[in-house]
Image (cartoon, rainbow, N blue to C red; front, side, top):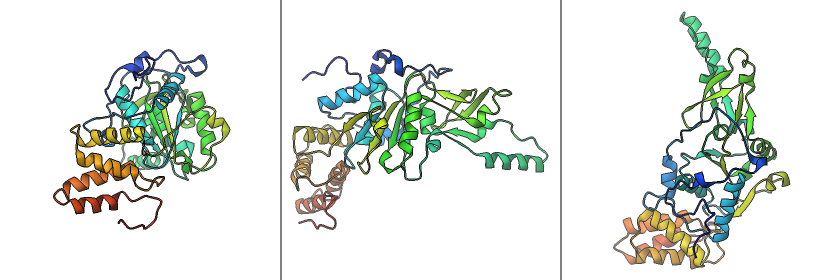
Length: 343
């Protein structure tokens, strides 16, 4: 079935300039940050590793999933992606960055101790003080540039005024403490944040060039960072907690179940295998995909297990069918069945 013409992200894995076809954002999601950053950094090596080097970025999506992903792009809203571990939630961010030419994914892994400040910026006041003391001891002049000690985090970098949106992956948001989702909501709703350390010196130094999460530098004026193109935000969750209603109503929710024994599940796995092992058909690959999908219905598995089984059976046991079968069963054991032994 042909895809609708309005889709910007098509899941083909073929890079294109479809992001330029997006209409202007809704009035309530339009931002006017500056000065505009026109340069887009190259795709990161992490995206290549996740997507594979051969069929880079090609993913089989259900039509309704593609429509939801594109709705988030049109509406400039975060996408909350839920599903079992290994169902491809994080991979979506890398696929979007690759196909739409949006550069390196800004990755913000969340743990129980993560705060909003961790994602926005870090100011190393101790290092600055130590450098000043060292310069005095050596009779030199310490740098007056506060930007040398201030680095924007993944979220802070994503909210810079890029002409083309950056992709921000907020990974495993459900592992955060109770306050972070609401704190994050405010930054994403306003599309901006302020840096008090820069605001205090704004009169004598209104423009400061700070470090960014991707190793570059960016100009911050008056201590305020405000986006121009709202970032493509992918927030993942393994379902370990519920999120507050204010966050949920400002996101679009995409659920990615683990591949099941159906046409869509098989297509997803086949696309993943082609991306990592090439397009040539392989009866051995097909057999492992069938085994992965059909054994122990309802069991929890990750697609990484299938890739591991394909690689090991073709490299370590290619000449012995019994060894291939044994290794495949060992590597593709359900994740939720403890110490179950292979047959």
